[in-house]
Amino acid sequence: MDKPEYLYHGDRNRQEVLEPRQAVGAGGEPDCRNAVYAVAARELAIPFAITFVPTAKEAVFSVDTETKPPRFRLRNTDVRWDKIGYLYTLPSNSFEKADERQWVSYSPVRPVRIEEIDPKDYRGWFDNEQE
Image 1 (cartoon, rainbow, N blue to C red):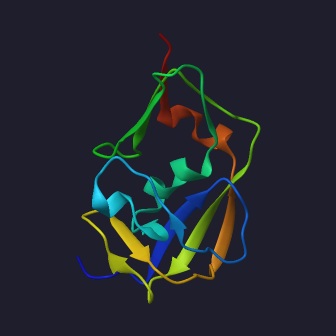
Image 2 (image 1 turned 120 degrees about the vertical axis):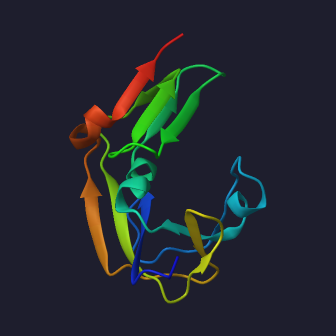
């Protein structure tokens, strides 16, 4: 895949410049870099702008990316429906491919656009299973 002109990053906090942070992901080395992470598909960045609250030790949050829009599956996890998040549109010039879906930048990135994300607008994207 060629590098798109813009990439997307979702975050629960508003920032004027995105700084590299140490990630701790479940997907091995590509998910654990000290970087700014972004994706080419806008809708895949949206869940990272939403605040999730685990309700048990066995809390699970996963995304089914095969559907459009994606489906978010929650188990023992609540959504803070009242907390606004942010979707950042980023210039891709400092990014490199991390894996089939993610891009990383090892330097700070200034967004070209910041959108507010109201989780209530995405209520239909969620399946919530409580145990």
